Length: 569
Ligand SMILES: Nc1ncnc2c1ncn2[C@@H]1O[C@H](COP(=O)(O)OP(=O)(O)OP(=O)(O)O)[C@@H](O)[C@H]1O
Image (cartoon, rainbow, N blue to C red; front, side):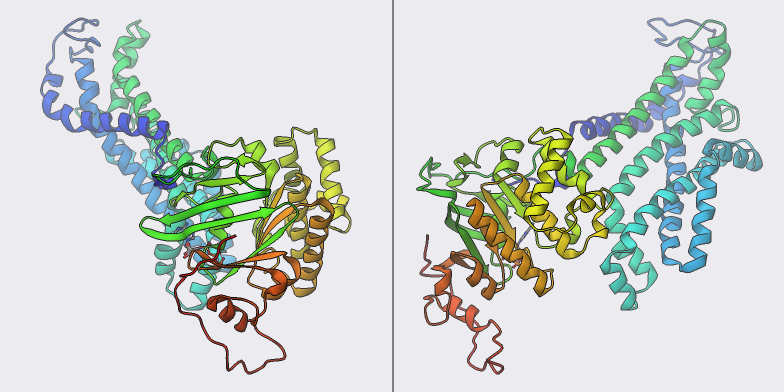
């Protein structure tokens, strides 16, 4: 099955917004050509009738036709004002983060000060200085929108500019314009699009407001705001119908922009997706295997994962017994993580996958699985403890979240359970850690907290993907000892992915060796030595493992063969 990427996950809001906006654009293109002269025909003032659906104004102009014709000018002015705010705002917001020290602080404070000044008041001042007219209204609203857009862009740029790839680009002497165009803007594009849509809606109401108070479009030209201005005496005289056309079009266009903005935001936010992992299919021509797990806690049969036409995992089958630690080793890119992620139903979007059996603890992962059941069954420990926790929340808040959300425990009970788990992984001062933020903990403490969070759920399977690679060796040894103890004491099954053959040999019961998306060898961990392994790739992997007693590994070779002769569990 081909899964759709998040960028193309259309949602109802976005589709409705785009359709509405398309209708408005069509009106803007067609109405002035089709009804331009009819909208100028004058006569006497009339109420709504079959001939004039929304009645006529004091000069006898048809209000429906004038509202439709005014769409083009209103839209062009709104687009113009939005473009000024967006372009200047983005330049200012990103530019400020390329400045250094005091200059940047001063510029940021100036932008903050301008944001504090009400935008419409600023627009009125600018329009009054430039004089009444359509162009000055566009400039006024555009200029008034710049601080708001610059401030929000600045916040986004602040985050992006601290990323390692920007620091590296600076160190390499990449020019500022290239840093902004190649590194910053592409990484801010989604939120900027969302902001642009809301700026469009704000510009529309602000431009209409300026024309309504007489500072915008001047006769004989007219936009929706001007039509509202002309309809005001009729409204006060008890003839509200004159307002209906322009007011409805302002509301519809505003709603379209907001729907597009919300739709883009939903598309950009992975949490808004109800589908957390792409659905997996059963290969065509084969049957979905049922309940033949033969005593395994976790079973994978014929797992295939591909990105378009490129196969990444090519028919992997494995089983993990109760209380077993199954190691997976193999060169970088051999498919270890993808195999593990398939078992956690967390494959990245854009990949397609299929299997004839995928189960943990009797739970068929090829069908729909309630998130709660999944959270109770499988726990994940990632490589980098630095990015696992939300930096803005206290550890206690996020560690208890799974307990209160999935297990529906009270806050007090959830805290008690997490504290027990923290003690289990020998975290020092666990009560204090619960009150601290992630940055106040060391890497080893965060890793212990992540393991505690996995354990608090009492899962049947723990998937640990290079859980200690980011840690120093003494902490690494501690964490591995804890994992082993937990596995022994609670009979928790584990899938342990690592590049460290020594660790795998010491921790695991059995080891799968992966090469180019296939399992090439399955072996007891104790037999993971050059003279006992069978496959040439495993031999070369072991030979390539640094050995302190063997400083000149002249005999070590790199395996370049195929995966023929694959062994299975
Ligand atoms: N989202 C994705 N889209 C396309 N290809 C991907 C995606 N994720 C992984 N791959 C590719 O799939 C292959 C297997 O990736 P995987 O992460 O499973 O490797 P790995 O064995 O865990 O490597 P490492 O030891 O470096 O973590 C790699 O060639 C990788 O480039």
